[in-house]
Length: 267
Image (cartoon, rainbow, N blue to C red; front, side):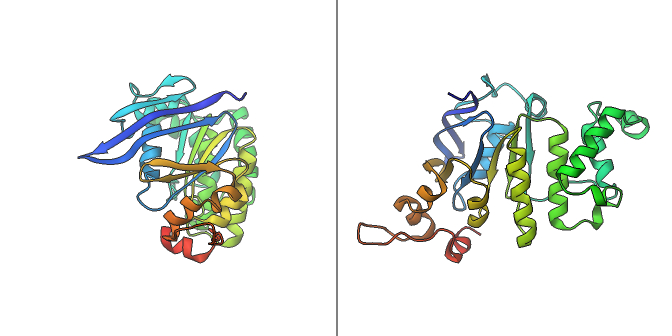
């Protein structure tokens, strides 16, 4: 049996009476890549906020590597090994990819070390390996503002990996990307899943099909609606009804959740 890196039990988050998460239960195995989908308002962003400590639960517990996260602040949880990538890339545009990664690798976060510290040899090797991994070795020394949107996404993922997190939280990594960039992003995440536990929040169902290696979790109204393989989830009557407003019975053929209708319903 795989060890659980993340366990969420009976979690409820209320904002002025509105339950953004409602008695939610969820667990993630160490080394697992899990994709989470759900329509707007399902609670996906609050789900990530709870794990990172940005929001505290009204009820229930979140355990990371067996430790209850409630007493800890955002930066303490980050140092424990939780890294989060937001939808919009957050990179230093006036610096090169190499310099961005060097800053991310630097464990001493102060102005002096950032400006005047010489990068150690081992760290340079780490940065070089990350540049290869994210496909930016050939653009290592150009300014990051010249990178495409997809390349900025890869750079930020590389900056997260540079901080050696045990759990990566990735929020809609292919929004606004070209088809080629989307495929490359999927390959990158699948590659990183060999050495990290990863949760990906995503709307693009074709991308979900590409990267879903095991279970897919569907959130709806702050709770887990269902879990299963991509094929199981996309043919589940409850999921089809939630996404498309199409009630399914024994005489209704299952809808294709990769269709344009789904994209419109959750965009």
